[in-house]
Length: 291
Image (cartoon, rainbow, N blue to C red):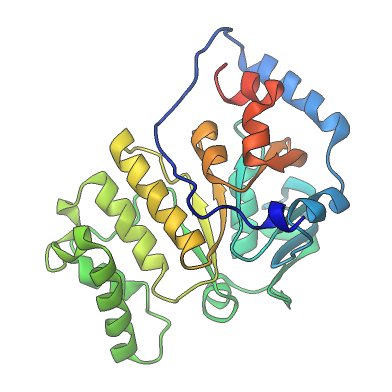
């Protein structure tokens, strides 16, 4: 079990890899076949064993949604410290809603969310960041285009009580990422798509979070920048010990990166397993990997 928990640090992420489409499936066919996966959905015990019984972030029987509509139905999710999960599934399955629920953007009807032994279910987003060490990296372009790179970073430290500490952290991050350091005094609008994503990731690191919620890191990026972003996420997990929960449109890329994958269907967990095992699963390949 220790071998399952400790993922090799020299795992490299490369290539875009969308697979070969051999069969054209309608949206209805995908939804129908995906629903079949739920017949043997994993138990909570299965999820715990998958992580080596490490419950650093733990979601238990969570039902949540927006307004009066429930999207997630009694969801369980477990991830250990320094581990990563990629959530995949059809459109509308509830993948991003899991991230939103962890961060406090949804209406939670029942269940609980525990991070590092602390019940964070009802905390507001700013409390999740400041007191629970949970940061959210949005899928949308969220940089402030007319602010400089440094000013954007300082916005990530707005909850810090000491401006000098925020500046020191921004300088540390700039020293880590030369691409940003070269443009530190330039407006963010001049950055490439990959550099903007790097700035968004760096801004999320200002408060030194333990958990990163990463929503569609590859969306809108050229393949060379996708590789760069995933290499950075790899370093954050394996070198800095960050716990990562990711939603990724490129299921092959996401599962290749992650320690574990969860397949969501209609707001429920239909499958869960090691990322490499799901990559080799014929049902997952047919429905989500293009071949």
